[in-house]
Image (tube, rainbow, N blue to C red; front, top):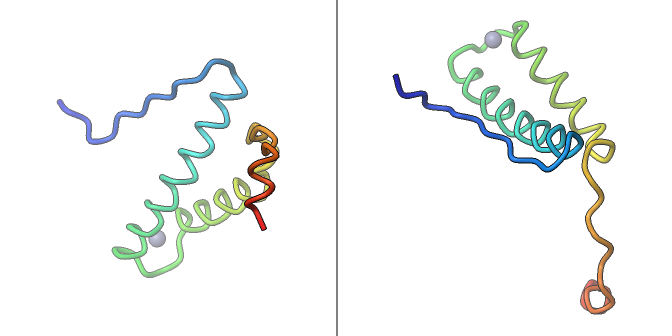
Length: 80
Ligand SMILES: [Zn+2]
């Protein structure tokens, strides 16, 4: 049997694995919620779960996202 979704997380350490998984979950949940609402207009446990999980993932995004490298001086020149 061929699965439509095969999820592989490549990470060098646990923190990175959590980060990648969280980003992926955020993306998939957003898509799933959109799909769900097309078929199911009434509010339900899935919708409540999806909305709360999305809000939580968004709220703590900085906590599980590894900080990007500091901008180089040339980037700062062009930022404004
Ligand atoms: Zn529903």
